[in-house]
Image 1 (spheres, each protein chain N blue to C red):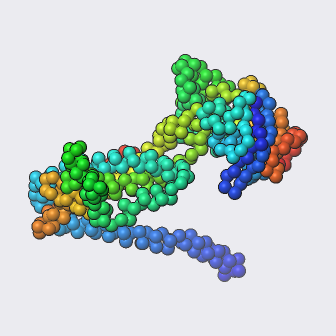
Image 2: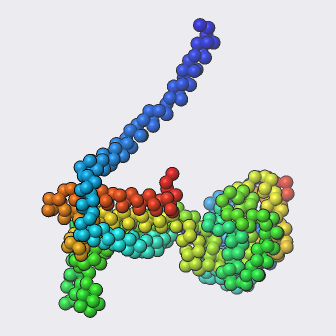
Image 3: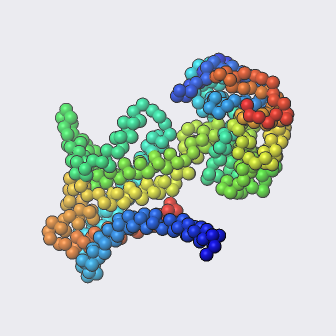
Length: 223
Length: 285
């Protein structure tokens, strides 16, 4: 489903050279690595927000290397969530569907379905001001999944949450990805998180993406 | 007094000293700040004391001052609207993109801010009257388009716009700098083009900045004098705005009328600033 072929990415002094890896359809892959090693850069290049110098990025078997983000049909949840300050929760869930000119009743039905799945039905008319970390995370997830993307990218989605909320969102992520069958690439520092969620686990070491066995369930140290 | 009691006393003294330590800070800061506030208040008070209500009424009843008032309101509003129209895309481009020549454009935008006003007016005059291979912009506008500019009301607006737009661009750039670009990135992954991300995500977040930029542009246009005098002239009932009225009244020895018009400009500026801030920018606190 996702395939990086000899991809080179440069951003100022920082660069990733000839990285190659692939994630199969419906798999939940976790990408680990120390801060500043290029995890977010890989996600950004996958969803089209960062240009690559060379190599190919394949999604659903198509070469999307030079496609604009809008055409890639990839759901993206950045680390800071980047919710839209002028929108209500419902407007977040409607946004991608309105852009695709879905019919009003289809939008309404999809928003209700997503809100129920994410447990945010009671928040639909709220603005994002005052939402808790967990609620904001659910809204960002709903926004990314609203248009039924085949690929979901999560940049440290649990890092800013308290332990209890983290457990909740972690369980929600597993349920959502199992239910929707979306192929997921999830960045984290947390080995326990990777152990709980990952089907496959990748590490960035020396500018390369290397697949390694997923951490043991009781492992707590960061990668 | 026991040793224990002495220790307690010294602790209490030390504690009081610590609590009092903020007072000099606020005294110094507010003392320095109040110098400027006092200067402005004294300037206005002096103007108020110099003129009387009768002088003020007589001045504002003059037909030429009424015409200047009308042209000022119209020209400042048009200049401010044109400024925000230009400043919004330019501010966005400067805030969001790194492109060749960006530093140069950034510097060019600041030129009207640092340029002496008379020089700006002179430059406008030269631009419109410079013969280029027998062709002249002003002559073309006058003869072919039927829209003469120099020494007419459009020159007033153009002179005001040239300066006020620079201030509006600065404000809009800061506004977009403060808006998280990540939200626009996410919007693009959701299906937006860059243009849609700007219109649907960035622009709605920038409305307070737009109001602030429009206000600053309007206020800046109100105070503009040098470029108007050189490029539009100060012809009574035609290109006279309130800033040139002050100059004209002074030049014919009508000090009372000049002060009255000055106070009128102060009132206009205060009304616009307060009104727009209360309505839109939330800067009243």
